[in-house]
Image (tube, rainbow, N blue to C red; front, side, top):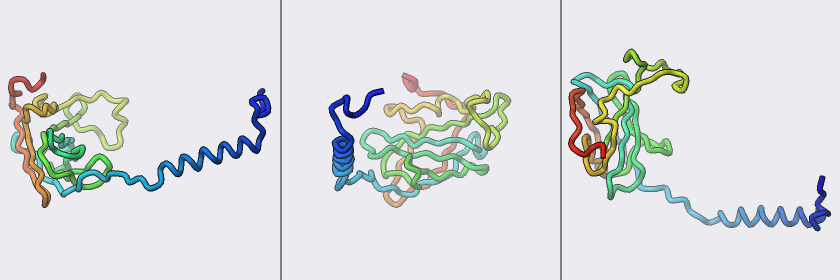
Length: 169
């Protein structure tokens, strides 16, 4: 086992070195401001599939080029209603244009995944048609323009929707 003396350091020199590193680390972070990102506005709505509320679907608001921020996400309730949250957990979404994608994971028989279930230990499948699950900033299947005062959307999806040419490229 090596001691501090074998490295040419005594305990007091090691303590001084450690304290200096700690103070330097703390000082380097002092005074820096963290960019909070663009302001968030309220975004909510209802999502339907074939005229019926889409239950337990995940909506992703993917920013298109020119829209600041990272977008947001939501999960629809039993009535298809959703409220968007940004990725830091704050309610809302930055103003801008978005391509909205949708996902609805279920058990293989189509039944909902039980609340609190360990999804990693279950067979689950994507129930949404692939046209709604892919974001391509050049081909927007479902778009949303979030306005400065906030926005409300009613998304009307169809299980028979076919992808536009080039969506999956």
